[in-house]
Image (cartoon, rainbow, N blue to C red; front, top):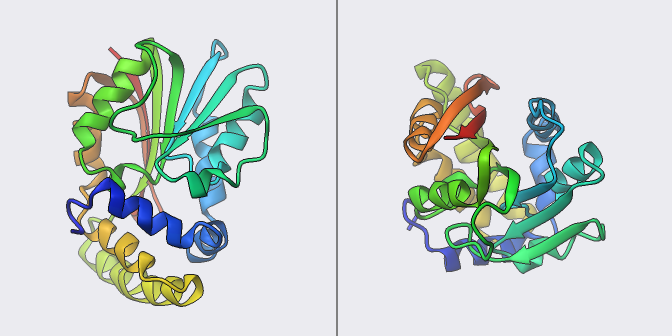
Length: 226
């Protein structure tokens, strides 16, 4: 179930933790989730951005930053969990409850598509990346952030003690569910930053930027549709 968790299972995971997700996310990342999202915004080096889709938008943390960066753009926040999207109260953001593998938009609807901490929870990443490419206009941008196990053996061991043991114990205790056990385990079964980048390129993208941070546990990539 961890490796190929169904969308219904993932939806249930986030339904169980939606009210405490932002708080726990900030605590377990030591507040670094904000700088990581800020970096996603910082690497957008174009101004001709009119239509934006934030996939796996959750409670809208990144969507709100996108609105601030592009105040005249149309920003859509998509997530499989309507419970998570219910925390978006900014009328400049259009929330849509839908699957990232089958998004309800016409071809070439967006100039920029983003996702933060989504790809490891998508049952079929190839389907998701194909959808992203379908929805982007020519030379459109895709910016992705996710978490991985560090490549270095020693750092991987230290990270595993923290993220695979302490984080689920803390998260499950605070949220009152076992959802963080799943979220932590999903990292164990996720691909490396380099492999993820290769998958995105194989789907029809040219790499423009890849940064690996936090002892190798965070990747931020920018890709251009080709």
